[in-house]
Length: 303
Image 1 (spheres, rainbow, N blue to C red):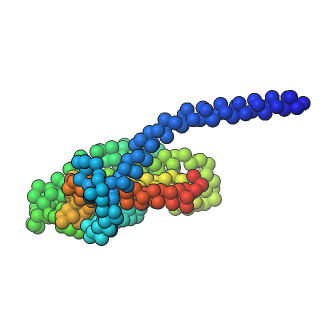
Image 2: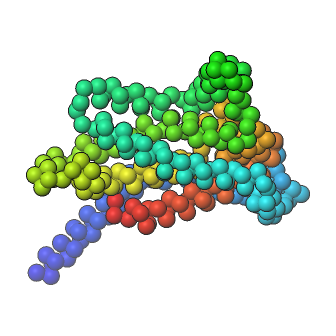
Image 3: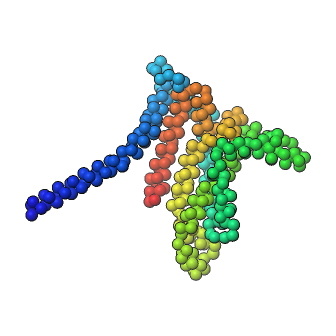
């Protein structure tokens, strides 16, 4: 019996070792890639953020400034405005973009004449490259040849220079972002709604539930995990919002429409203040990490 027990223990130990070896073989490539393209660049950026570095040569102690880049960053009014604009974009996404996507998904989730066509129409802006979308809407909002300005002049008004107004420039970004991305979230919701068991709706109808009752008691609980995922994508996407800003407003007028990433680009990279830009990047990275892990822990803990 003792010999058989030892053999069983030895066999189990060998299987466990083989299991660990197999796991290591499959996990090692991802760990290597994550280290090369995520961990090391973040560590290098964190190191360079303590230097007044222009990116042309390796940072030296002659250019060491400690936390000065971070102090300048937090006290810079343009960065504060960029933070405010980023928060405004997040708020618009959560309060306008996602509810609009939900409403359109509710209309188009079921098989009706033309529903597939309209899904594609609303999803097409998401496929369009951000730079192309920004240039397209920049032309639309142009004060001289833009569609809106031309209509206003045809009605007897003056030319409308929306992109030259400090307050309206941010509004244009919100409008274009909603137009560009709500179709993506709509398709997520459509997929979630189509996965709900139809018998639940039949049972609700038998119980005399109204359309709103079915939506509130069947649809929303059925796509709750999809909504949480959509909100997660939306928040992180807004924190990294950049591609539409550059062709649409360029951060102007008077640096009034910058987001965090466009601020990094214009005040760090284009001005050859790479150390300062790294400070912005590290700050944004920490914010994204905190948001991602907090959201996962408190909101998506059951998903």
